[in-house]
Image 1 (tube, helix red, strand yellow):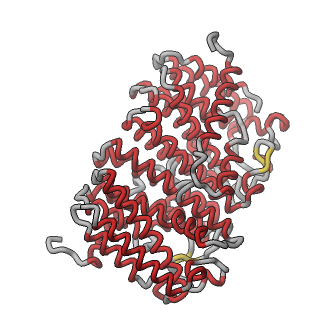
Image 2 (cartoon, one colour; image 1 turned 135 degrees about the vertical axis):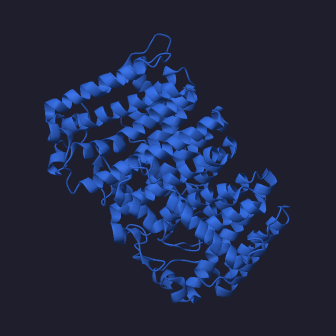
Image 3 (cartoon, one colour; image 1 turned 45 degrees about the horizontal axis):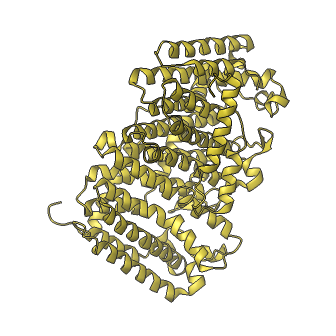
Length: 301
Length: 301
């Protein structure tokens, strides 16, 4: 692309590159039971906006880093995200039959296979991160930092912690701060990881990593509040799932605590603050990050 | 210990050090939902022989490596092992109510919490590995190699692959080679990882790592065949679980294919070959590794 691509083209291009790389990410010569390989790929290739990969790529690009290395990290984070959805959909958890208009993993392959597919995706994500050094020449110190970030932000005090708090909270949240804990960890943490990974691959210094972290936390929270809003006012066909499911499940959301208008205000405020953080950080070119922030705020699905 | 400790004392000492370090391994200042922390610790602290930690420590010691660093890697592998047991016991998988004489994780905390506790333990294991560099000064290149080994040997072509093949196999195995695939991956791979991790922390060269790998694969297979044998002839009180469960579940085992006596012969042959591999490798002191091999062959539970 010699002329600067529109955001839509840029996004589409990354969606395609991620899909190709994901398909290649399980080495063909590896002896993997066919049921396991199929179950992993079924959910990996189920599409979606590839939001987290997009953020890895954009953060790396904002600092003029190696896009090919970032693509592997993007696949790693998509694997972690996918595993979390597979486990989340299980009967013992949210018990969902459909996701993005397709049958959920356990509906197709059975519960045991779905549990194992999730476990395998989580583990394989760390493989993709570890080989950044051998395959792409990312310095081993950075690879160790990326591994530590992923384990921290996806682990017991990160994404899984948010998920556990969400399950606990089904007995009834009484404070907005509890909901914020859930959103921050269940959603923001992996988004924050995506930005840090892209930044680290590009060799970002501490101050720039801090800006990317702030961007991730605020953007992640805005993203989740927007999800809560769309569950109330969104279009089922565009969303590919039933709306008002939160209310039917008596799930407490942002609009429940502060109302729909104030929630919209929060999305705007957080998005503006996220953008300021990266604008002020002196990145080589933050423009794609800013476009992503606007895209997420204005999305209708 | 100035005088050389007996193997029993050596083993007991490691069991205690691992228990202490495991309790410290979830930083107290980390905000983790209490239900998640409890579910993780419940299974982590449920005891057991700590066989994999023992192998990490002994491999590191055989090469005169840093035992304190090895202890963290030992905790990481115990977390991976524990997560695999928690998920394995779930109703959708083996549906076990008891393990080591205690209620299984999901019987105490519920299925959702058990799934998340497993996910969290797997993720946190990679955290313990990653921080080997910062906390113990293990070179970053080695930490990356250990991470890659763990992801490979615990992932889709490793332990999870073995588990998936085992589930597939419940429809009926017809070949000994299929059973060997299951045992090699479900059991040997994580045992092999334990030895490699200990070796890498001690800075083992490729030839010594290869010897440790051979030792792990053969010992792991012998260990699993011995498990199959004990399920037939073992003492329920010592094992802490019901015997003949394999037969009742119509599980195909080594004795099923080649008979009890030939299975015993296999355990002896594999153990002898495992020992030869480390004896010939020129390690500084392989004596604890050899003692472990004998201990496992002669155990009655």
